[in-house]
Image 1 (cartoon, rainbow, N blue to C red):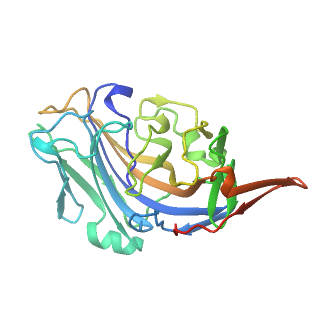
Image 2 (cartoon, helix red, strand yellow):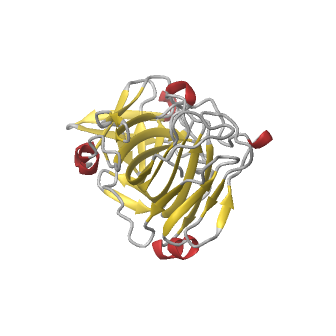
Length: 303
């Protein structure tokens, strides 16, 4: 459920940390968004989540990091051996991450409070803070698929043998255009395939405006031929994050490099179930009257 950053191999070496509220939805046809999400073979994703992440570029802190909630509670991030980041390398990620979901915004607020959240980063010389309003979050416009693939029964079908370009409503992201490099705001668009546990299965496509970046907004995601396995069901995740609190306080410590930057904000995630069309023996595509129809054999296994 997290909004994750890029790995050390694809960005400048520095420490970043963030906390955000996430509004998770599922697109089931060209115009419908359902609440929450149930990844095939995975866990149910509640609509509202609190998510925090610390990106050290793969470097271990001196101890497991701790997120302090606004109401005085706290949680210790999961770690690997010797306090290493728990999110594995290989798909554009290598960082610490924690998150928890709730069915209502009020329940999330009651659990964590609203206001100042703290980060204890091992032996860091500063305990940085970020402010987050959990009572009245300002979630941005929901990402929506506007073109590419073919909808049927709440699933987007694509032909794995062809190039498919998924297009999104990025022109509606006015907050993204408004983030003009200001030190106090920014926005990010991220598109990616994830597994049943919502961990990336390939490097994401990311654009950011503000927070030291000025990327043009992502408007599409290209699925190259051979990327998907025929007959397999996938999870696609489209994230749009708007940050309204930034902390550039300098500090040092084990595993901390560069000029650390923190950001807090609000994320709207749209999940899409994507299925690669089966082999020709299991599917027939018919083109007529300008429409594409999919005829599928009944499968023995349910999705």
